[in-house]
Amino acid sequence: MSVSKEFLLGLPKAELHLHLEGTLEPELKLRLAQKNHIDIGQSTIEEVKASYQFDSLTSFLMVYYPAMNVLQDEDDFCALAVDYLEKAKKHNVKHCELFFDPQAHTSRGVPFETVINGYYKGVMKGREMGVDAHLIMCFLRDMSADSAMETYKAALPYRDKILGIGLDSDERDNPPMKFAEVFDMAKKAGFHITMHCDIDQVNSIGHIYDVLHKIGVERIDHGTNIVEDPALVDYVIEKGIGFTNCPVSNSFVTSDMKGREIVYLLQRGAKVTVNSDDPAYFQSYISDDYYALAEKYDLSKEDMIQIAKNSFSISWISDEAKKKYIAMIDEYAKEN
Image: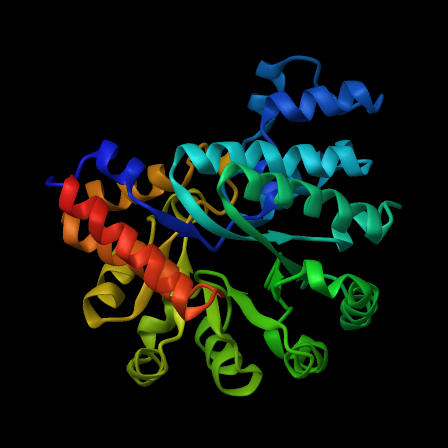
């Protein structure tokens, strides 16, 4: 393979598919559990690590949501964001747009303001570290459309702290159109819009069609099943709609990392990107995902540079900032 892990670690990049709740490393989970006097059923780092076991999206979520009980006050949410951003800096992430799930916390009695203010404090500390961090508020699709609307309204007083709106969690029986009304409101209010279209779901291609042609998203999270419909592939290429792909997390919940689909889309000129999704659970941060994909599919240095450029191209930053970061990639490639 012609691209090294060291090159990929230093490559300037943006991360656009990262769940803050999925960055809860065992060490921080145990520390917060002890601080907040919460019995998590584990008392050592090794026991926490052993609990991070799953073989499907459903089994992953059964581990993922209970772990959040350790997050109680603003300091906890801030600590979680800072813990991730320190790692992101080591992977030379220059810009990131971070998912968070307020309903996972408000549903267990944590006020919305605690969640948003805590995460935002972390984001501001990230910026001080040199990582341009922003927040994307996601709705949990396995909760009701009314709950999403209630959450959206609760967020409006904090809209200056929220860059965009997303949709995540269990897609089974929870199609995108279930949330059409709230996303229409969010678009009209000027929020950026994205939605998860998870891999190999029932009616995946129908969901992708709906998010593109009915909801009108700016990008799709995961979404590799789009290769099943050549007309949709042509459409996203024409419109410049990007994909936030997560090869390592894909490999945990399906038989492969959907690498063939990612490579096909890349070669067609679609704006695919590589991201880490829930790195604490998959033990793979963004450069690790870059390397895993490059190694398995023998991708070139030029391929990986294009993926990094795509990450800035489809990010929600100014054209001037995009040019700055892409020039930074070119300079890095020239020197390495």
